[in-house]
Length: 308
Length: 308
Image 1: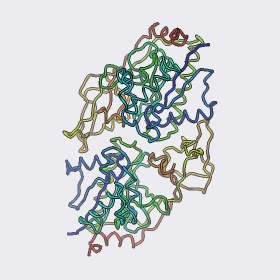
Image 2: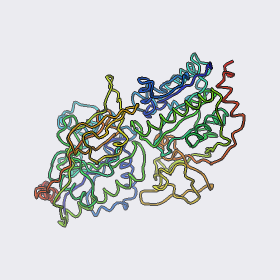
Image 3: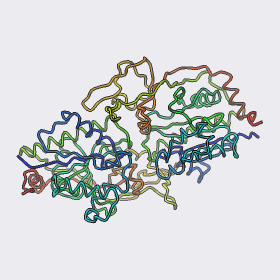
Image 4: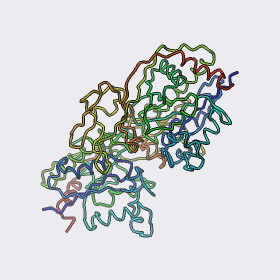
């Protein structure tokens, strides 16, 4: 019997309430999700923020898993303490060790269901490829962004974020719950299959690789002077070209896209990113071969080799 | 020349950011809205809440215009103070008196553009009928609800709320800005026409009269046990019948509507109303004759009689 334990996280942001609601109801009715005997640790990332329906109390928990923050016990803001607590308990060397972490989020962007991975870790790519192959989910690879670091799943040898949108913050929402439940069930099924050695990996994975984030046009006082153009609002995953409408001002003036051809915007107008000065992120769509390293990495984790 | 002054309010709730943004840009480019010489006072209802993108600081400003709160200067929460400040300055007896107040809101409900009136004041009905006649806007009449009182516009002899949705809180949103601007421009045009005596009132007005609000099914600890059914989510203004699906639990159990035939839900799943224990409000659709009292009431206000 494998020692594999999966960490499932909901409510890392306290105003993304659908996955926490699902976890809570799942606790009450274990039969609604089929776990096939998998060992699962299920936690609310930021319970204090969830109580008050805010993204965070002091700082964004999903930027609080930087090594320097985890190692410095003098930092006493709520999310730094909570990040250390989660890693100390459920980290790969924790008291209830988990090897894979899946972090369920929602977004106000019209991204549908998607996967976010951080860096090019082979085991992450392996799991992402399986979910993409089963459900067609697009994959956003976040890397090379020194202003956004310290994501929760980076503290595990394998981990990825599931994003579901569009949904307003603080709103219990039928579609979002249904989509979250669907991805969760498929994910568990794939992990069970991996453990049984029955997995056929796809040959390729389609990646949307982060290139840069762009901000709203702002006034000298820092206020947005334009909104996302109506033709771009809701058009996540659709390529943008030089000259395409990007923002619009109140008087109808259009701010066009100036940049490389064939970039693909994601997280268009995510409400929580306005304070991070991100109106959207631009990605490059690439098809990668899924190397044998990826199969090996996930099998290594699943089959206890990591634990020995 | 009429002494009429119109009070326009945005950001009565600090996380409804589109109308405040529009007002701010309009200040910078006065030409984007045609005022035809109307005297207008334009204010941000809750500037402190807007700064932190929260609905309110201490209490809901749009429940803080109750007479007892306005008269009791000992009550020192931020919104009570702000309500008194607004009435003392822009109220009908204030230092910069206004006779009509229009309060611009947004909602996460899929209500499109609509009008909310409080009680059956003839002048409110007159203006609502003109906007309905020009733009087809539905009218929600909020009355007979002792748990929800103290709305801003009730402190003026004439006043109504414009609601635009669906839009997440805290999100600058092309459609919402465009719709807010459109209603604002039509409203000003109608007031200008009223002043010129050129108005033809419609004979009838369609009203959605508040009957009751209903809450989510809740656990003994007060947590929602079900979400709005996918067939009802987004279906504002569409009649609901005995036995229609209303809520759904995680295991797929459907909670059906038990009640009078032919009620029409509004504010379905408005994020801000969860704390008020309102999952939606039910209304009765009625066609009223627009009496001559309504024409007289608005003409009386517009033509200074009120001020003498």
